[in-house]
Length: 116
Image (cartoon, rainbow, N blue to C red; front, side, top):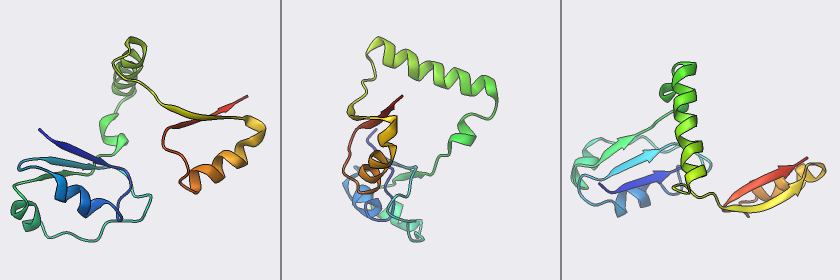
C-alpha cells in the first residue's frame, strides 16, 4: 500500500492526496503550515478510494506499557540499522536560540541536536 506521511498540513495536504494511487493512505500528523480546510469525504472516493487518518501519539500509547513497547521497537530499529536517523546539525546548548531560529525558518530537513 502506498502511504503519504504529512506533517506539514495546509500547504501540502491536497498535493499529498493527489500523488496517492488508488487505495493509498495519507497519515496527517502535523500542521506546521496551518490546519487543513474541511474535506468532503467523497473526494477520497473520487481520488481512488483513499484512506485518511489523523493519528495522535496519545491514542497509540494509552498506557505506560504501550509507550515503552513502542519506544522500545523504535530504539531497537535504530540500534539494528533498520531505521537510520539523519542528523543535519548540532548546536551547543548555549546556542539553542540559533537552533530554534533554524527550525522556525524551515532551514532544516534532518534532526537538530542540542549538545550540553
